[in-house]
Image 1 (cartoon, rainbow, N blue to C red):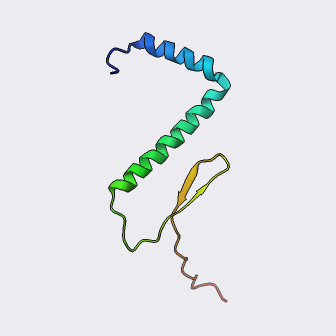
Image 2 (image 1 turned 45 degrees about the horizontal axis):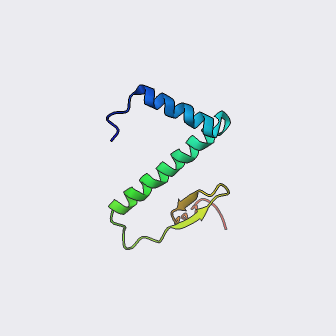
Image 3 (image 1 turned 120 degrees about the horizontal axis):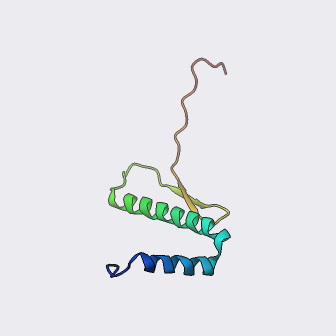
Length: 85
């Protein structure tokens, strides 16, 4: 499918993308694409690894930009033996 694409084809595609989105929006577009790929890879990795049945469930929240962030539950820290109550 992609065997017939040459450097000229990629250059033309790049020019079309620049015309459609404009130069100022490209860094944000690349950033969101990178975050999406990172989330996709982490989801693929978590699906291939069998989850621990004794583990606590993960909580998912969304940030202001609509990106879902997954956080693992944290265990309480042990009390500092040198501190006084």
